[in-house]
Image (cartoon, rainbow, N blue to C red; front, side, top):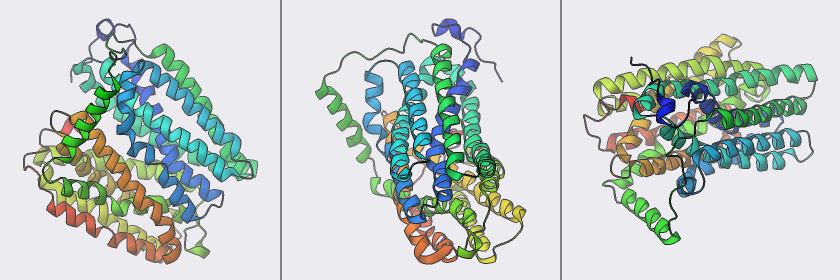
Length: 437
């Protein structure tokens, strides 16, 4: 493999090495997302919020990622990407501190949700700025060389959030004797971490010559660009099937992901497995994440060799059929912690392998003159496809109970199989797209 260009600092107007900022930038991109989408679910469950409320309100937090394409042009038009990155990290730190301060209060649910909303909008905006800065701060060659590094540190952020933070919360719950105090400490730690990220990146981020606000564009011209971008997207051939695929491929997974942690945490008397907070952190943050990563790597290699069309059916089966392990867990309620780990590893491996098809299909749909904007629209529909089913999953679970809820989840995979059989895909697509996965 060719090493990154040693003169990159001279090329891009700074002497900073990419190693000083790329790992930390993508840790800072991944941490808020996993805190908002996963850690918050576990926290609310430990604070005795009902599954219906957890699923409904934490699913609403997907909304900033749904509508992110609507305000992403303003990040280009106003100030610099570098400034946006540092400012959003400070705002994320403030939002995390707000959660920490309000967790011990009487009305913690309303207050913490308000701060999580602030976090979600700040994190979505940070994603836009950070990904844009990555392209401005590196040459084309070095963008390709560091793509694996950025992905690795994003996944490490998932590991830190789902694993280490949750295990630390479990330890603090026991040592402090107070669940609210334990989670307050966790969020104070996160808040301090993000203030540190902001200070570090204020120093470490390069100042590329290209990172300047775009020339003034009239409001009418910006609006015309918006309209044209969306018009060309919704005029794509087979747009109805495209949208059905984006919304339904993860229909079952969107419901499962909201109720999996509550199921593991709930006592056996109500159908759960009665695991501790620390044990759930271990299951999802270590064993589950390693299996997810392995599945994703294998999925990318398979698609690169034979193309998306050849592997689509295998991948839709992989992301859906392993959900059956939760039926086994809920109906047998195994005592062995390692049985739970193996079951979750199977489900997460299948998810990692199967999600490759979804990512490749979004690249396939976005291809064309407006590929960046169209890919952003696809990711908006991806978030919407997770938000809507997730919102109703808690109500369904409380109505059916865990055992029959997981049966329902397996039945909910049927729409994904149907749309996967209907969408047209070029047989050669994917064979040369492995770097994009």
